[in-house]
Image 1: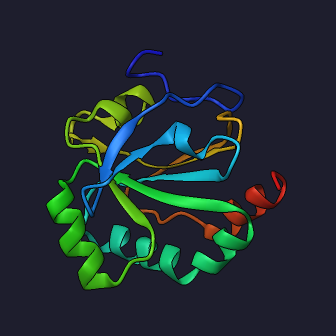
Image 2 (image 1 turned 90 degrees about the horizontal axis):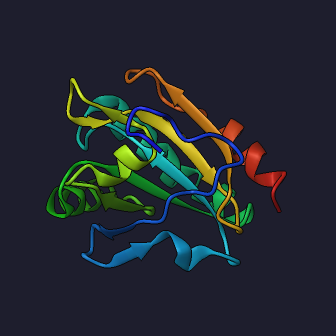
Length: 155
């Protein structure tokens, strides 16, 4: 898949290994057969929209858990930045560092002009297949209710 082509529903989700805010490796295939995954791509830590929607992920953590899913935030910030932000905001979800921009490019979600990820949601089912993709304006927060409804259809 080219860097400019956004991932599509029905495709196999590209494998990745990224470090979370605690410097632990997170490998997409480790969830295969176990959990559905919500990949929540966002531009940058500490920005107002990103902060509000990540707080919403924490507030809605039980809903995602009840739907058998794990939320993984992905941005191009460093693990250290993620750690400071997650600790300051008391986030429950893991934040993955794509500092080299490899994953955002694999998924076709790289904003070259801003050198960051687009605001996008990709739901990957237990078989590693993409079941939902929504790319939205950078300044528009995602709708957790819509994401949870998608997850309920995958149980």
